[in-house]
Amino acid sequence: MPALLLIRHGDNDYLAKNKLPGHIPGIHLNQHGREQAVELANTLGKLPVKAIYSSPLERAIETAQPLAQSLGLAIQIRPNLTDTDPGEWAGRSLKVLSHTNLWKVIQNTPSQAQFPGGETFIRCQERVVNAVSAITSAHKDDLVAIFCHGDPIKLSVAHFLGMPLDHFQSLSISPGSVTILKINGSNIKLLGLNLIPPFSFTIS
Image (cartoon, rainbow, N blue to C red):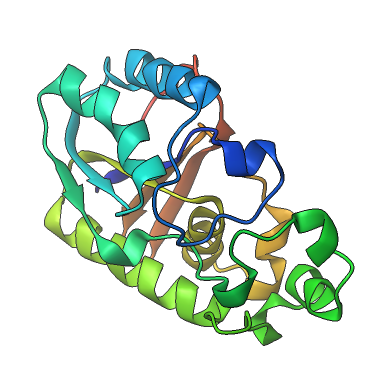
């Protein structure tokens, strides 16, 4: 029964400025984000992590690097772990976007939302769950670290816990946080949600 550490990337200037990063290339961790990555490595480096996977976006890879170096593991890139594609909304202010009609749909009935020029949450959930399921199948009894993004983690947790997609926005996933799932077919255990290092836990 594998256990998955679902880790949101650390802080960056887009988050600090309340902008939607999406798939914009070249978004790197800021100083706080780099400190979060080191703290994650200090906490998770004590655990028997057998593999590290990451979204292809720089902010996720950079968050994974200290742990990978600590454990001597390669970072395995999985494109389907990438962030939700907001299309034309990428780089725009969340304060401005929050006044649009689509924002209300995104918050209240996200299953009906599609970003202009981007993807739906249904499609995002589908691809991320496929990626996580493939990783789970490859690691029958291992502890695995997966570095990705807020919405993909929330959508994954909602799926594996049997929550309707429209409820996924009720979950909170902070930058630099760890969420822990133990998966054995239909037997799913949520061992931790939105944990901020340093912390301790038992896989049972």
